[in-house]
Length: 363
Ligand code: SF4
Image 1: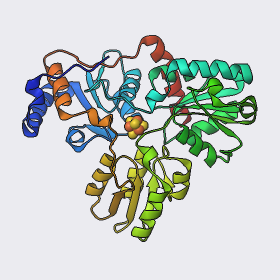
Image 2: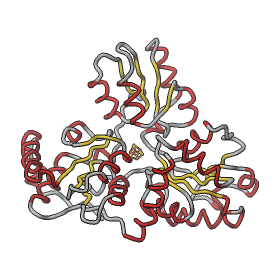
Image 3: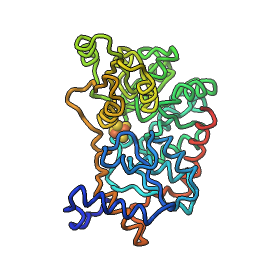
């Protein structure tokens, strides 16, 4: 579904007028509405959020509020899909801007995954391969793993899910983020050089040979996050030179060398907890999206907090949720029109729910 153009009377509104109308619409919707805000959203959006969190936490919150008729998800498309899967049929999940996708999620589609699976099935015992999808993926991919004995994972529980999978099979197919898969498997002692391969969906046979398929325990999908790919070991070295005593924490969507050069790695929730609970006066160089790092710096003025990337790159798709879009969808709801509803077809949702619930049971 494409995003329709907003009326010019909205796009021409000044920030204060936009805020005033959002406030009025929100009050009119009352308990029928909850607004969810992902940590990577800009401040002008996050201030309206009833709940802040990472993608899974927000979807779970949505599921815990059956009284809410409308769940406005200020995040990206796959998150709204997960919220739709975990909420009731009478609840509408709304994404304020339909063009807010995720470049990583777009790096694996269901046709490519099925082709890869068929190809692997010709070359190895596919019954011993467990598919794992990061939640940053379309509902169709979640349904695929649900149907094929696998599970979803998040950056918080990836280790537990990979351990679970390796108890059930000999090998994993991990998509769409190669870095989270590699970092997690490496933590468990699996050698990235000799026991992992990268499957390139654009190359013949994934760009790998039969020996690599036979020898590898972890098949990684060639996908990445364009925001976290920007962090480098050179930035970490520079931060350590410039800021004596700095502690470096990065997101596990960063590459293995960056994760290994950092003092810690973890999900957005882990980063928030570690930094907010750290003693006053501590110094933190953080490798994740700039909106979250800047907000953390403002909310923890007793600490020195900065982003490792000096060029400062927000997640461009998260950034598409502008206050004008939030206003437009809220006023439409007030007028009885549900715009930008994200709906996962029942047959897909049924299997995707299996993968999500399996993950929740394991973690
Ligand atoms: S930060 Fe990366 S993984 Fe997260 S929504 Fe943006 S592109 Fe996708």
